[in-house]
Amino acid sequence: MSIEIRNVSKHFGAFQALNDINLDIHSGELVALLGPSGCGKTTLLRIIAGLETPDSGSIAFHGEDVSGHDVRDRNVGFVFQHYALFRHMTVFDNVAFGLRMKPKRERPSEQIIADKVHELLAMVQLDWLADRYPEQLSGGQRQRIALARALAVEPKILLLDEPFGALDAKVRKELRRWLARLHEEINLTSVFVTHDQEEAMEVADRIVVMNKGVIEQIGAPGEVYEHPASDFVYHFLGDSNRLHLEGGQILFRPHEVLLSREAVAEYHGAEVRDIRPLGAITRVTLKVDGQNELIEAEVVKDHNTLVGLERGERLFIKPKANA
Ligand SMILES: Nc1ncnc2c1ncn2[C@@H]1O[C@H](COP(=O)(O)OP(=O)(O)OP(=O)(O)O)[C@@H](O)[C@H]1O
Image 1 (cartoon, helix red, strand yellow):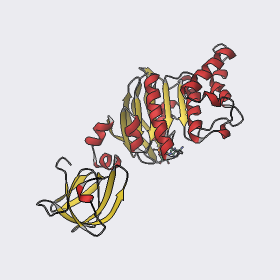
Image 2 (cartoon, protein in one colour; image 1 turned 60 degrees about the vertical axis):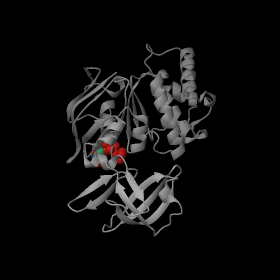
Image 3 (cartoon, helix red, strand yellow; image 1 turned 45 degrees about the horizontal axis):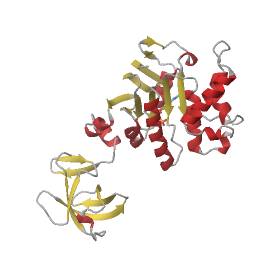
Image 4 (cartoon, helix red, strand yellow; image 1 turned 120 degrees about the vertical axis):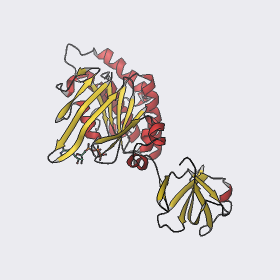
């Protein structure tokens, strides 16, 4: 099911949270809304869900205007960061909840509900936890159960608001990959809010970069990273360095740098301030002559300039030509 967002604006008092948002999300797509805190991501997600009403503009699902439809009639699933499971219910009952709440005419039999719940729990690979209570689960397990619960009513659209925000880095990574795989298996349209560019790059088919209530850029992860439409997008999508030159400046990413132990024409002399091995790469912090802003260079850990390198030594650097 596709989602068409047309000229959506939203104020909270004098504050404009969304300013004339236009966005088409294709059927089966996994789209990330990415931007800094307060840029309006959650507000847009809530408007898609029907939890919030825009001041102007419309939302259509597959061409049908749903602006006037109540949240219950939109058939969307949610997974929100703090959208807790019901504490007094087992995992099984949590996942069954949405089906049991259906009006009597549409409600499946208990047997069909049980089959469906076990199928969903198997899909999130947690069927063995069916009889547990939420407090007996880890954070990552709870998020997967929340996802199973959201999927139980077979929504055509799934909305995720920082679903992995509260988890530690390793579990987040596992869950992200798992979500991307799951998304390929069941043909859902999903919109995913995050302020973490790595999360958006890793999971999404397309990224919508937002800032101060407007969309700065829409594109595939590689596209927005390689061809940022604005300085804001460039800075938001990854670490960046600024080298001041006579009559201008160059922006470049930490990996877009050439290093040398010897002075070379067009290279800039710099003092090594810090050397951080980060696994496969090593980050070197440099103070370039004549500028106070530090530069971070990232090179493979066995790069020849790193051999025996110590703080305080001199290196020579040059941003790569395509930077
Ligand atoms: N109900 C409300 N009343 C007043 N202001 C609100 C309300 N909801 C949101 N806002 C404001 O609108 C702006 C956008 O909020 P929103 O939650 O959409 O941001 P966000 O991009 O999701 O940020 P975060 O990443 O911090 O969740 C914020 O400045 C927020 O304070």
